[in-house]
Image (cartoon, rainbow, N blue to C red; front, side, top):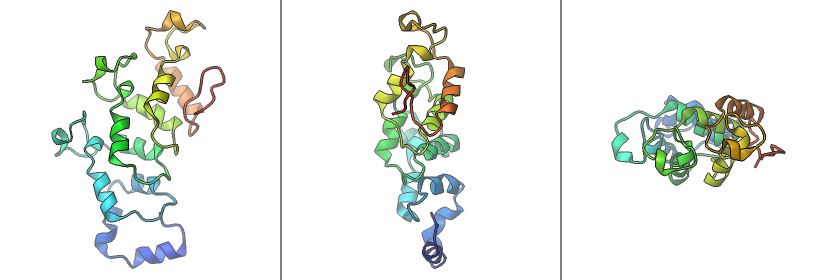
Amino acid sequence: MVYNKDKVTLLLHMEDGEVAFAASPFLKQISSMCNGKGLPEKAKVEAFLKLGCLKEGWQGIDEAVKDKPLDQVLLTHISSMCHSKGLPEKATVETFLTLGCLKKGWQGNDKAVKDQPLDLVLITNISSMCNSKGLPKKAKVEAFLKLGSLKQGWQGIDEAVKDQPLDRALVTHISSMCLAKAYRKRRKWKLF
C-alpha cells in the first residue's frame, strides 16, 4: 500500500480517522488486496469489513450474522485470491461464496448441499491455485471439481468413478503444485 516516499508522506499527514484501518486486526489482509494500489479509501475499507458474507456462519442472509465477527480464515483466503486486485465488490464476493460447489458434500448437485456450510479446506485449495488471480467463476470451479481424475479410485476411466467423492489429498497436492497458477485442465493440467 505504501511503496514510495510520496505515499509515506501522504500516510504521515493523514488524520487518525482516515487511517483507522491501520489499527484493524485485518490490516494484513487489507494490505494484501491493496498491494500496489495505494492506500484504500476509509469508506471502502469500512464497507468491505462490514460485508455479511465475510462473517462467521453466513449462509446467504446478512441479517442472520449481523452480530457475528468476521471469519478471519475466510477473509485470509479471499485476500489471497484478490492479492493486488484491490478490495472486491460485495456482489463478487457473495457470488463466489454462494457457489454450491464450495459447500461440504457437493457431488455435482447444488440443491443437495444448499444448507451445508462452506468447505473451508476446499476454499483453501482454491485460494492456493488462484492466488492473485481474483475470485474464480462458477463454471471453472465446477469443471475442475467434476474431473474424473480427481475422484477417489480413478484408474483412467471417468465413468467408473462419476459418483465417487473427490480425492481430497490429491486436490491438496495439485493445489500446492499450482500455487498462483489457477486451475489445471485435464491431461495438460494447464491453468485457466
